[in-house]
Length: 491
Ligand code: ARG
Image (cartoon, rainbow, N blue to C red; front, side):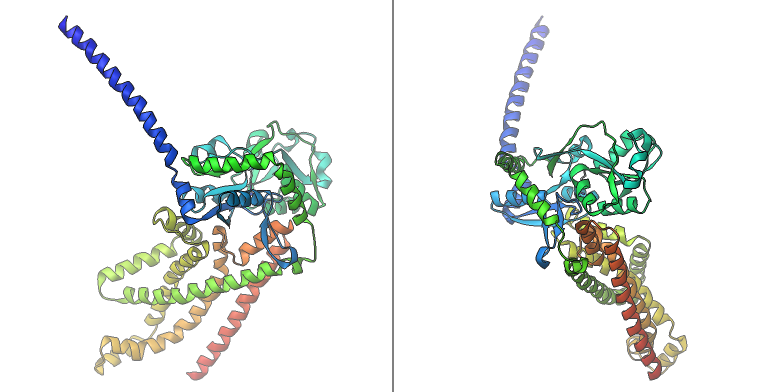
């Protein structure tokens, strides 16, 4: 009896306690949620809104070059500008590949993504989305000569279908076309180029964007097929648990809708897309910026790489084992991993692991220096080793110390082996530096991609980039031969 009563009281008390805890807990967390928005606090403190996008998506985001002035334009850009203005913030646009955007958002490289992005269940697991500001349908683009071949999506079964990497169009190809051979490409101009050159049979592209590309590529047209999915929403992506920021975004979006601003934005995007002037008058400024930055990155890479490389080489040659091991591990690791991976590691690692806010340009340079140091260390070590052993022995037997021997006998001879190899490394670095374009460093390759997006011409910009790289490396190697020749004479 007693134990029964005791049991009942215990249950009642526990229930009471639990409900108290629940009520206060939820209240507490509500209060907390209202004040806690780290993303927004961070943005406010900085005074700058960092917006990530992939500027290959006219009329949503692309680069214009009217009157020789280059700027990011498009519907998304106008929305971003409005959001920044509504909140008294400066706008900073970070242009990168579409498939790098979510990673950049999650590691805090950018505050939000506005890049024609469709909310999907998978993405919603990673990030939050604002209200929708635009709806768009999906199209299948083919060569005009093939339009009659395709009456329905079934006719695309087993065909090669192009789509931009990590987009809903890629998904669509998987879901709606039987046994499609999907060819995913990082940037949209590549998707167009593959289609034009016959590498793919069709390309899935969002309606308004496809129209923009078709205007400039008269040999392409729409296949008369329908996807079963309804029109998709387009939203801004932001970090999870950012209620204040989300609210600010939705307020601006609502204002844009209420005032019918999207139509205005569309018109000015169409205007910016209009053609004026020749390829070179319009885009030469892009390539000039590219050349400057490629040269800058390569020089920094080689010069600082040589400094660290020399230190590493001496460490590797030293008789103090731990130093030797450290240098060996570093050199082997860097030479045994792709530069592309190193670039991404530096780019995302600096913010994600170290919490540093470093620009893409600096990240690119750091990655190049890290990489060059390892290769140059080997060049220097080989150069020193190639000096005849007898030289050291002779010097030492004359009573010179290790340092003295190195400085006065070995190094001057080693330099003659090292300099030509260093020159070759320079040539390699100029070419390899194109890899840092993936994180948005504005060097030659990156600008070629920007021009691809802006001109809707996927091929010419690549050709120009190839010629520019060739001129740089060719001139450099001629200069090197000249000096090598002179060094031989001085022997
Ligand atoms: N709406 C598609 C998606 O969210 C494609 C967006 C591509 N955007 C771009 N700027 N390239 O997957």
